Image 1 (spheres, rainbow, N blue to C red):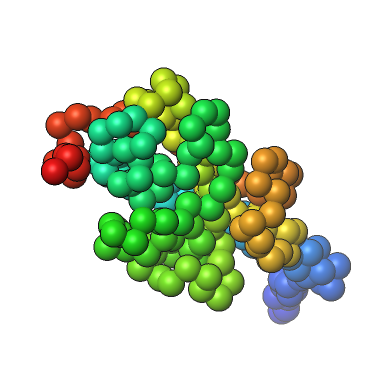
Image 2 (image 1 turned 30 degrees about the horizontal axis):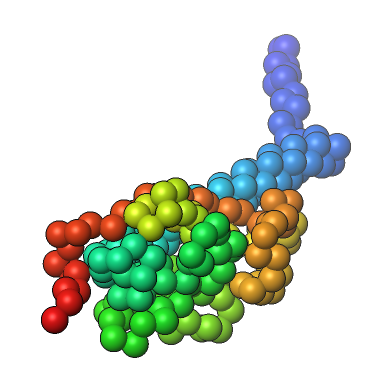
Length: 204
């Protein structure tokens, strides 16, 4: 009587080399995904900072437009009624400076927010811990006594390789900003003396 032999089945599995290759491929893929995630987070942070700086610049441009409502009659002399525009000399330009209201008779509801934290919230007190954004203004006559060009720039330090930014001094480097160290957003507007301004002062 013939005896049937059952076929031998080889065990299916992975040897050590295959496991090590698989782990290596997984590690490379995970590292790539992590790098993409870090780049995406940093890109989102920079986009948020750019949007905040643009909002700060627009806030200051609007503040100067409102300040022009205090530009009374008399050309240059009428600037005594303004809060910020009065900083311009009789001719030429001011150069870059930090805008601070010098008119005690009229102040905006929000403080002089030329130094702001990461949120860009103008209600935060100037000089708050760890300021991130600095704003400077340059005033220049376009037509002496009747029209002024207002240039506004908001700048903040770039993050280093580790994602950390260095300290920020808002009164340093007023004329030239090192673009290898800082991001900058700029804006400009033209303000003119309006004889029909509601804040125009008339002689008694």
